[in-house]
Each structure stands twice: as structure tokens, then as C-alpha cells.
Length: 234
Image (cartoon, rainbow, N blue to C red; front, top):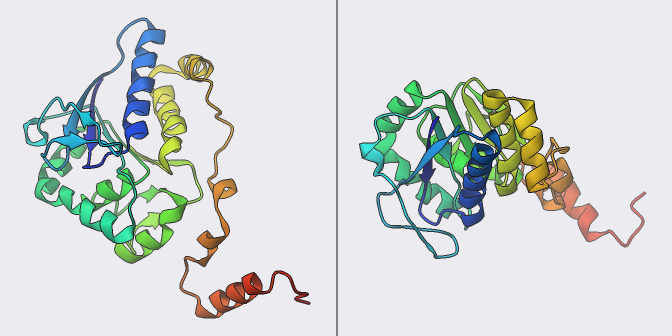
């Protein structure tokens, strides 16, 4: 299968290399090549990772005429406003991306990569997940999307979306299971020693995540409780 890895500026290093590791090891364990991949820069500029390391790209996005699988890798999160600005890298390629997605078999996105994919306009009628700490971002910029930040990954049709960066592994396992079956997934899990038992992001949520809503009365109560933790509240 031909896999296209779409990378924004400041691409998260571990997200990109982690996905490539999974694809490469799947090929090795399968004893014949399942996947071939190419890296492309979303902005068209020279690509650097979040660690400021140069990333060699294989093809310009406008020169891609088709792919079996499209994977959107996230960028380093630097705040909601900056993420929204960075998402505008998609706009010049929007029609081209929509055509590529229409002919692809699977479209995957993880972490902030889901935000970039959302700008292409293809997720409007689909259920999706993303990083639990981006709830306010989606409420502000994509209020019409059906986003559930609790799930580690969600598949709706050809689209598979996942939460924060390390959610790429269960997302990739879910994808490879459909392509090559459970035995290969079991081998991958054993080789990479990655846990697969968690299906929810809820255990990782911190308290202030529950303040990312717009109910002013409830917020007032939450702030009161936080300010009075050393006192009797009843």
C-alpha cells in the first residue's frame, strides 16, 4: 500500500518517526513489503521537526496524484491561536487534498494532525476524536464537528482519528489489523512492547480540562471548590 505522510511545519518528531517505525517493522514481521511511504511538506517549505532537525521529504504535495493511505502527522502545540494559524497551511491545497482523499482507502490523523485534516472540510459528517486538551480549540474553530475527546481513536468510514501524540500506536494497530489481521498486530505489540489496553483518554485528563466549557455558573462553582480545598465545603 502506498502511504502518504503529510507533515506540517514544526512536525512533532516522535509522531512522525513513531509511525514510520510501525510501518517499517510491520513490513519486517510480515516478511514481505506491506507498505511503502512518502513524506510531504504541507507548507511546501523545507521541513523541520519540533526538535529543529531537518526532515527529508520525498515529494511535493502538488505532485502527488494518488495514495492508498493518507496519514496526517501533528505539529508541536504552541497554543490555540498559533495552531489555528498553522492550520491555514492546508488552504492552498484544499481542493487537491479533497481529491486525494476521495480516491484513498484510509485517512488517518493523530494529535494536532486532526486539526489540519479538519480544515480540508472532509470531516463535517464524521465522528472523530483528538487531543483531550484541545476541547476549547474545537469548540471555538470547529463548533459543528462531532468531536469526542474521550476516545483514544475513532474510526468512521475511511477516517481514523486519534488523540495526543502517543495515541498513534493504538491507531496504527487498529489500521494494520484491518489490512493484515490480528496475528501481525500481536507481533508488533510484542516487538515494540507497547500497551494496548487503554481505550480512553479520560485517565490522562487533568483537572483544568473540566474548566474548558462555557457554563459560567458551573465554572464559578469549580473555581470556588479549587480555592477552598483546605476548608470544609459541606
